[in-house]
Image 1 (tube, rainbow, N blue to C red):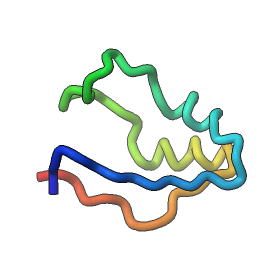
Image 2 (cartoon, rainbow, N blue to C red; image 1 turned 120 degrees about the vertical axis):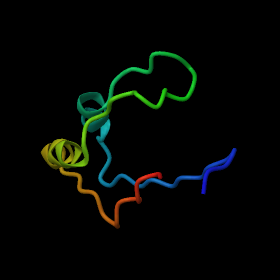
Image 3 (tube, rainbow, N blue to C red; image 1 turned 30 degrees about the horizontal axis):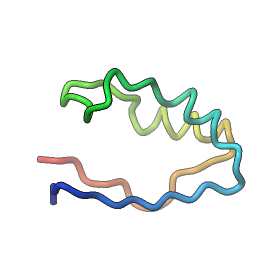
Length: 66
């Protein structure tokens, strides 16, 4: 369900997750929500990057928006 407010809780253990964010992310172009056509890395690529930093994704992925 879409709404005006979202809540998210993330845990990173052990710490030192900065490398993952540097390699897997990119600077925001604006202070606004990214446009719908913004391209991001796919899940498998992000999982591979996370593995390099000793991290893994757990839990089911969120379903795509319709």
